[in-house]
Amino acid sequence: MPIIKFTHHLQRFFPTLAPQSIPGQTVAEIIQELDRRYPGLAAYIVNEQGGLRKHVNIFVDGELIQDRQSLQDAVSEAEVVYIFQALSGG
Amino acid sequence: MSDRLLLGTNKGLLILEKRGKTWEFVSESHRAIPVSYAMHDPRHDTLWACLDHGHWGTKLHRSQDGGATWEEVPAPKYPEGMEREPGHPATVSYIWCIVPGGQDQPNRLYVGTEPGGLFQSDDGGDSFHLVETLWNHPTRPTSWFGGGRDYAGLCSIVVDPRDSRHVTIGISVGGVYETCDGGETWQPRNKGTLACYLPDPHVESGQDPHYMTCSPSNPDVLWQQSHCGVFRSTDGGQNWQHISQPGGPVYFGFAVATDEHDENTAWVVPAVADEFRMAINGSLMVCRTEDGGKTWQELRNGLPQKNCYDLTYRHALDITGDRLAFGTTTGNVFVSDNRGDDWACIGNYFPPIFSVRFA
Image 1 (tube, rainbow over the protein chains, first blue to last red):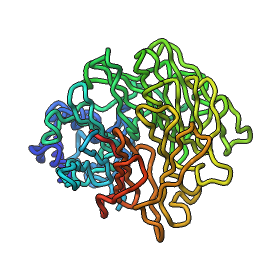
Image 2: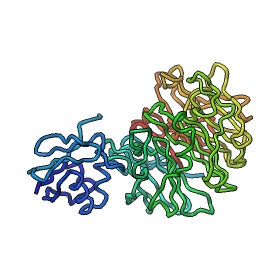
Image 3: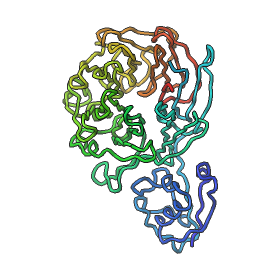
Image 4: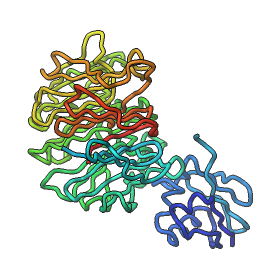
């Protein structure tokens, strides 16, 4: 069961957000469970069609996920899932 | 006449108030988050702020205590599976505006978005749904497209104060559309406007109204500052008259404001078209017509007249009584208490300003 870690920027909107273990087979399932634990959080990470927002990155054990549209990358064997914001803008 | 200003800026919502003879900075909300639009809904004394997080998407917030605290409400969403174009999911990439419904619709709100979606709420903003009749208009796939941004933006929403089922909207780029049956059907209303960037400038759809509004004393009188001139209609958009000045300065710009009592009076803030998008000859002016666009006066008193690069966006000019206010991309805010004859700068050094609305 992977540990989910977050950019600290998300704590501005979800102050109690902290690294935590979440069961799931795919990144999409992780996001779904996160939204159950923190209502509204999913809308910060993915758009209304389920795609990863343009300037958000998710790494599974250090590897950028491949499926940004439906988030089907496997996580069941992973140790750490990082949810970061991409570096962009000024 | 209102003494309160809401500034939607690149670094948050700023609220200014006139106390005595001076305008004072009252509060800052949503620090460092771009606020694309903010307005006060007098029906419920509610403030609304449209946020454009660079990373986390578009959000909608409301305040029922004058901006002291804010509540995030679910932002408008395109229905699951909906596509902007074949193979490309439709997602809200920008909230252009939020507008109250009619007086007989106390819980109705409209939201205009990129890419070209009109959303409607009938529960005071707790939830929104896409107005699919407009989204599915047969002209959308071929005639709506991006201009300054990537996709078409629904930037103008005019609810007829005499009949709430009569709504006119403006899409940049797409054109003006009207419903007379509460949104069941929509008709393009662009006859007489010009799309100077297309092979056929007289297309029925594909026009670019940067901003459109009506004269409150006669809502059949519509005004639009388009990409290719200023236009006025006296028949609810059935026909538009080109009221720009040959050779300018009244031609290109984004914002237009109308007089509350006089259907012949309006103000625009001209700029250099269109690949430049800056003040004309380095000097700032507002132009006013008091005869329905036959003639224009240049109003410069109190505005910078050299080394000026200020541009005023489409939602960054507003009016209350005889008082006008506008904000610029350079972070300046100017106010006139005499219908534009004289201006005073009430703040420099603000972030780039996207919207200015009296509250």
